Image (tube, rainbow, N blue to C red; front, top):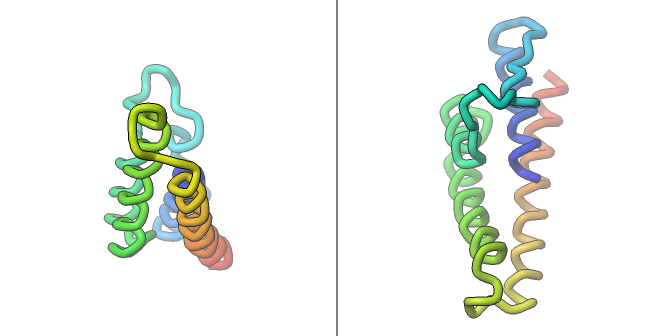
Length: 108
């Protein structure tokens, strides 16, 4: 969800900065031989490129940790449906912030 939007935002920002239509294919469809680009790496690259601010980076990091807890420890932890439901709404808010960034970059 956030990862895909941020990859697009990085491409758009790079195009704006370089005044070109170049696309970093490794962000969209990495080959098996390409180095792995994790979600956390995408968050850091977006922060460094000025695509996102520190508050969104922090929100992404917290939501990522919560999501991983839900996915990897659901049966072994104190997670319940309320926790998961709240996380869905938290992630939706983050998605809306990322969509606004992508839209702003597209408009430029």
